[in-house]
Length: 156
Image (cartoon, rainbow, N blue to C red; front, side):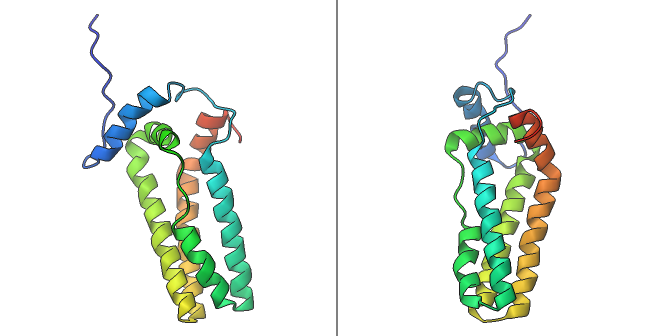
């Protein structure tokens, strides 16, 4: 039996992901076990949900200043700790790039929404809001069930 070191596969062109994966083996030895403690990511998602509700209410009142205030908070939401990011990236493996891409789409659409709100362009705000929602939905449909199963043993 050979004892070669474990070398997780790395998505092409993502050296940072390889580093995160390697570090996750050191910092998060229980990556495979269901963890009953909520991830920071769960709280971040709840905060984003609350912010999206604020935007929906502001849109209904045509309160473009409120939309312009909240949109960058959605776009530049806080990130989980380095250790948690490493655990998440290790779990995602080859799907990490699509997870990051969904986050970029959300960021870009939220910034677009904020710009439209500053211009008082209601239709542009609504279009960009829909883009944020579509990015969120696509990511949730692709990853939520597996996240819940892996990190919470079925349900958070």
